[in-house]
Image (cartoon, rainbow, N blue to C red; front, top):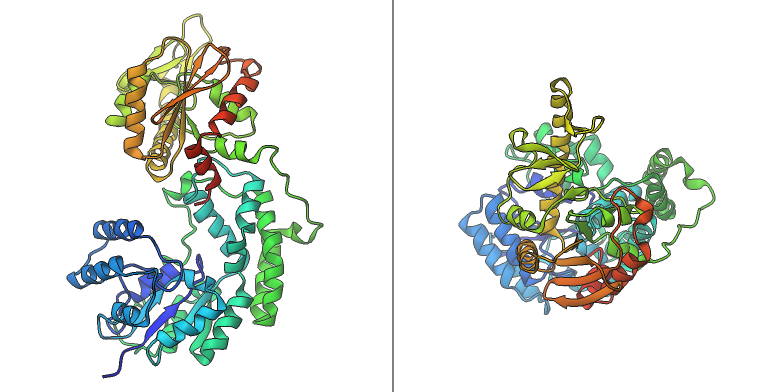
Length: 516
C-alpha cells in the first residue's frame, strides 16, 4: 500500500501560515494536525509547551477522539532523536495526505534538508509563504518582542535594534538562502507563494496551493471570500493587541534599513516581487534611503531593561516619577494610585471592577474607591476651593466615563501581564512595614506567575538592597520624596537600589532573556 504524502509549509512566520492553517483545516482530503506547528525536524517545542498547548486546544477548539490521539502521540514523541519512521507514523495516522506547517523549518541547516527529503513519502512537496520583509519584520517585532517578550512598556530603539540583529533572526529571514537551499533539494517539488497574493485574492491563492499539493478542488473547499479574508492580516489591533505599544517612526526606520538590502537581494529570485516590496517600503518609510543614522545606545542597557520589567503598585508616586525621569513612561493600573498593601492583596485575591460610580468618595489626595480601598488621582475632584469636592453633575458623567474606560483598559493590561510574563512589582513604604501584608502580597503575585518578584523599598537607612526573603526583595532609600516635586526624588539612591537588584541571579536571568 502506498503511503500518502506529507507536505510541508516551512513558513515564513508572520506571512499567512495561520490563515493557511485555518483555511485548510476543514478539508476532508487533507489531514492538518490540530496543533498548527508540528516542529518535529527543527525547533522542537518542549514537553511542557506541548502539554500547555494541548490544554489550550481543549478549551478553544472542538477536538475529536482522533485529534486527542494525535496530540497524545505528538506530546510523547522524542524530538531529540528524530527518525523517519516516527515522523511517518505521526503524520500518517489518518491514512491520507497530511500537511505539516512549521515555520521553524526555514531555519534548518543545509545538510539537514536532504535528511528530511529522504524521510518523506513519495509525492510530498514543500512550499513557503513569503511576505514583504519590511512588513513581516514589523509584525514579528510586535508579536515576539512586544507580545511574547517580558517587558511591559515601550522598548527603546536600542532594544529593537538588538532584537532584529540577533544572529538567528537574521538567518531565518534570509529569503535568498531559504529558497535556494530548499529548491536545490526538492526541485519542482518546492515552490514559493506570496502574502501579496493572499491579500489580493485569497480564493485564487488557496486554489493555487491546493493545486500544487495535488488536492481535489471539491465543493467542500473553503472558498468563501469573507471567511478567507478574516485572517489575512493578523496584525490588526484587537482588544488584546491594543495593550501593546506601537512601533515608533525611528523604530520603523531601523527595521526599514535592516530589510532594504534583503529586499534588493531578492531581485535575484524574483525581480517583480523585489521591486514591488521596495516601492512599498519606500512609501512606508521615505527616509530609508538617506544616510543611516546610528542607533543611540542606552547608557545602561541592562538597567533600562530592568525598568521595563517593573510595575509600580502604588502607595507612593516616587517610583513612577523615577521611571519617567529615566525616559521610561509606562502606563499601568496602580502607577499613580495610593494602594495600601492589604487593599492590593484583597484585590489580587478577589478582583472586582474598579471605579464604579457608587463606590467613589472624595478624600485628601484623590478619589477613594471604597470597595477596593484604592485611591485614584482623578479629574472628578475639584481642587479650586479650600475643600476638595466632586465636580458638578453636568461634568461628572463625561469625565467618569473617560476615566472608567481608561482604568478598565489598564486593569485588563495588568491582569494579562500578571499571568503572561514575569515582573518586578515595586511598592514603597514611608512608615511602619506591614510584614505580614507584604508576604501575602508576594504570595498573591506568585499565584499569578511563579517568577514574579516584589521589591519593597522602605524609607530610612542607607540606600541599597538589604536582603531577599523568598519572592520579596527588601531595600532602603534614605529620603522621602514629595509626590508633587519630581526634582526631590532621590535618583542616586533609587539607581543604587535598582543596580543591586540587577545583581540578583533570578532578576539578571529575566533581564538577559528579555525577548524569550
